[in-house]
Every structure is written in C-alpha cells, then in structure tokens.
Image (cartoon, rainbow, N blue to C red; front, side, top):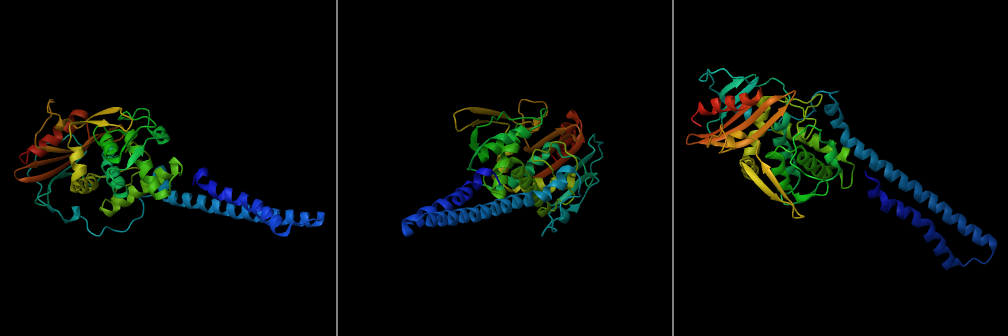
Length: 362
C-alpha cells in the first residue's frame, strides 16, 4: 500500500497525545509541578501506544499487498508452472466436433486453427495444443479482464506505468497525464497494438483489486493474476500470461486452442468486437488532444493487398519469440468463423489466414 494511503492513520496517531494533554489540562487544571509532569507522562504513553497501533496497521496493509502479488511472481519469472485454477464450468472448445481434413494447402505457420463458430466444429488444426509465445494476441485477454473489472466509460489517466513498456514495443502514442475513457484506451490497445495502452489499462484495473494508490508493481501483478484466472475460467488452462501486453517474458506461453477460447469470449462482447473491427479510429482525449489509431490487421484495410470484406477482426501479434501471429474472424452467408495463426512470417500470417478463411467462402 502506498505511503499516502496510510497518512490518515499516522495523523490520527500523532493527534492522540495532543488530545490527551489538552483534555487533561482542561479537566484537571494541574497547578503543581508534579501534576503537570504526570499529565505529560500520560500523554506520552498514549502517543506511544497510538504510534505502535499505527505501525501494526501499516505493516498489515503492506503484507496484504504483497500477498496479493505473490501468486503472480512465479508466472512472471518463469519459476513456477501455470497458475493453479479450478477447472472451468464449461469449456466451449472441448465441446466442438472435429471435421478437419478438407484443407490440404501447406501453411507457413507453426500452429493454426480454423473453427466454424456457427456449426460448432473444428475445420482445420495444426499443432493447436503446442505452447508458444502469444505476442500481442494476449491483448484480447487484457481487454476481457479489464472490462470485467471496470466500466467502459470510466476515465483513466496514464501515469508512471508507461515506464514498463519495452523500448522496441509498439505504442499508441500515450503520454503520462493523458486522460481518456476505458473504451478509448481499449481501442488504443487493440488497433495500433499499443503496449502503452495495455499497461495503462492493467494499472488502472489492477488498482480495483489491489486498492487505490498502490504501487504500479502491485497493481500490475494483481491484474496479470486476474488475466490468468480469466483464462482458466474460459478453459484456457494450457497458458500462462506474465505481461498485459504479451511482450516476450520468461514462462509466458499459450496455444492456438487457448487463443481460440479467449477470442470466442471476446467476440461474445459485441462492443469489444466492434472496436476490434475498425480499420482506424481517431480518439478525442480529455484535454482536447487527438490520437489517431490505425489497425495493424491488414485484412481490414480496404486500401491494402490483403483486404477481405468478410473479415471482422481481431488481433495481430509479433515478437522475436512468437514470430508473426494473427487471430482473425469472418462472417459469411454460411456463418461465423474464427482463425488462429501462430509462428508465421510477416507475409505468411496474412496468406495463411486468408487461405484458411477462403476455404470456407470468406
């Protein structure tokens, strides 16, 4: 817990001896030197006891903050296995039927998955359960977790948590002090894949769990733990997330099957799905500054060579460990489809995704 949140406790402790001294003087009005000495000793004793109580209160609060972050530490450093979690009440992916075999074109991707959401069946899969680095595809889970904890119209002010963003990471262009709604911040994370927006979201939502005013480290730790709990609740138990932006970290991994579980939950939130479907957006910040956001998903760019009008999202990802990734969704007259491509090249992720989606008429 931050020092400023304990200020009322320390202030009350220091006020106790003054109250005892003043109250004793007004009531007893000691005239002898001995009486005045006794009154001062009583005030001093009360002050020592009050300070001791305040110190115990501060220590308990600090231990509580550390306790909330403890479960995150193993995942962050790679020292532990995936976070312990109860099995999900219902695993959507496990209930899908398998009808693969109709797609024979070789893919560059290390792992891939094509699902007919409408019919509830898997049409193609390749290494769908292999643990791989998620890159920015993790931001779908970041959005789901933040929206589960906060309202989309709440105002968020970016702060010192922006210092956690890696030097070579993608950014939306936020600066400390920028104020925008949670909805706008989510857009800044999803479209230009802003790692700065991901950390601002995580720090704000993390303080819902850890308490207002807590240090960035504690807020981020609590949020990432909530991400893992959210993933487990969706059945994504083959994953461990360590950062809110998906940037490479020891012990962080997911699978194509788990990303499909997360993406399906994301699509069920119509407002989040609409944000991810935008090719571009201009955000008006609270101070009047505008933030232009262009979607990194080239399947949504009408002026680009990879454009497909059936595509409705969702999220790109690229790091040195993950390679190039893409979670895409499409809607045709036949229904809704979900495609996951992991560990491909820059060109390969677009070509692989379009090949899979066009095999079902997208």
